[in-house]
Image (cartoon, rainbow, N blue to C red; front, side):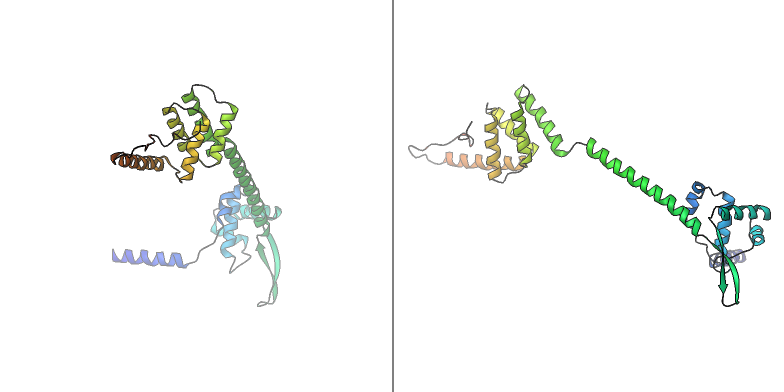
Length: 253
C-alpha cells in the first residue's frame, strides 16, 4: 500500500511538473464557429505544445501523438494554412546559423478577434435595446404615484378629477410632497367635510413649514399639539380668553 501511494505521489508530481499548455478558452469554445474541426483544433493544440522548444514540429511527430493518420494530419494542416489560420514562416536561427521554419497563429488570432468583436457588438446592442425597453415600459416613481393619487382622489370625491386638479396633484409631487402626505391631507380634509384643493394645499404648506415629511412625523406633531391643548385646558381660564379646537381652523378655504 505504501509503495502504491509513493508511486501515485511521484506520478502526480511528475504530471504537474511536466509542463502545461496554455490554450485560450475562447478558442476552445468558438473554434466550431470559425469552421475548424475537432481534429484541426487538436492539431493546433499539439503545435502549441511544442511552440517553446520546437516551433515547427514535423507532421509525423504530430501523427504519432494523435489517433489520426499522417495523411489526415497533412490534410488538417493544409486546410488551416489554406484558410490563413495557420502560417509557415522562415526565420534566421543565429545559434545554428541557418534558416528554419516556424508556425504562426496570426490569422487564427485575427479570425477569433473579428468573431469576438461581432459578438461584443451584438451584446452591446442587446443591452441598449433592453435598457430602452425597460425605460419605456417600466413606470417611473412619479408616474406611478400620480396614477395612484388620481385613483384615490376620484374614489374619495366620487367623481373624475378636472385637469386643474390633476395639475395640482402633479405640482405637489414635483414639490416633493410624498404620496403618503398628500393622501393624509385628503383624509383630513374629508374628515373635516372640506374637499377643496386650496384647503388641502394649505395643510401641506403648513407641514412643509414645520419640516414634516412623513405621516409618522405629522402624527407626532398632532400628538404634541393635542398635549399642549389639554395642558392649556387644565389651567384656570382667564375671562375673555378663547381656545381654538382645531389647528387648521384659520386656513383659507
